[in-house]
Image (cartoon, rainbow, N blue to C red; front, side):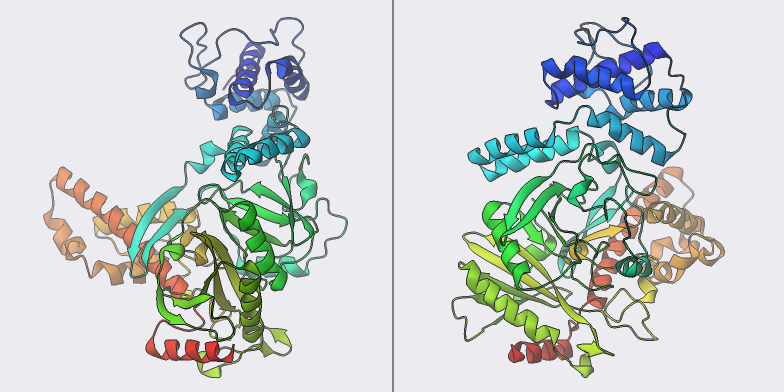
Length: 540
């Protein structure tokens, strides 16, 4: 796309108006914002530009200017298209190099010219909080999207669907905005020397306003809300990938490794006291069973009801020293103890006793060892929410042992499921939302085409890893045998079969995800596993 200077002037005008319409800036900020953007572009308006835009905005969706009364409202113009014009100009003028990373660094710098200063965001958040916690998070979430920290035009490309399983409806997403991480790389990050790197990681509070570099994203448009949890400095932000509604991250003000301890439960429940409309949880603190970032203590939450929260208890249990707390084993593929009570201090006390008991628990019949060669294996993934007037804690028992047979983890997705999911099963997946790699989108399309063509799936590089799985589920759908498909010659009928096949594949992916969670259960959802689970509970 040619990005001449006149076009750039229009784009700057449209972007400034976008800032005004979304409330990122006030009218008094318009000249300042426009000049800041021109400065980044190394462009001088030279008196030809009206820095306080009063004319109609520009519609960049077709590359043509539309001015005057018939122009669409500025906020309706595609932000992605406006930024593309500015980025193309920056590349043509040699301000930045061509490349996705260079463009992402630069468009974040541009949006930083429109993003309110941290003190202003905190002030407005506080004002809204006086109205209600909901009003405060509504304001902050909208800001995080409007300033393009959450890139809505990328997120909307993610594929999402619901998959019915024996454990209820699971959420399945194919992530197109974040690369897949290898479990070994995650573990290696724990031992990597931090050196003088600044910021030390993506979750440090020092990221606010950071210009970024080729191996670290720019953060001029990120804002944090300070919180006090368990008498410590913490912050809240939103995830740039928003896997679910209002997906927030609550991070420690200190760069320190993940740790599940008594204070963890206290912090989670204190967060709920501040934001009772949110769910909040923590990844486990050990490799394999933890999340993708174990080097900085943080929690994840949001305004979303996960499948796990809808699951009932399959069995009620009692802890004699805590008669006022309702407890049970959740009917869920993983091993989960649920606690409900009105007194957060008592919940913290019981949760800590369960954690202490589990840290030291061994049951060789279930392949559970607390330690081997001095290395700890047992930990917990905790999740907290409000259930009416009561606090609810779900404690998911985790173990990260490896063997020669299962080098990535005994309680990790096993090898036969890696064609769908190989990554660590962290907090989000534990709660019933699958985050699957982007590669699957293309592979599933090729898989469906090869099935419809009656081809040998093992002869295609993209479908070969899925061949055994496809063979197993296609037995349930005889209409898709090569012999039956040959009989269908009508194009409309074949199109209908293909459309149905896409739905079948989505359903079967959901069933695989349920298996993934079953593999991660320390006590299997079988009669033997139930007995083993009850034996552990008696030790508490």
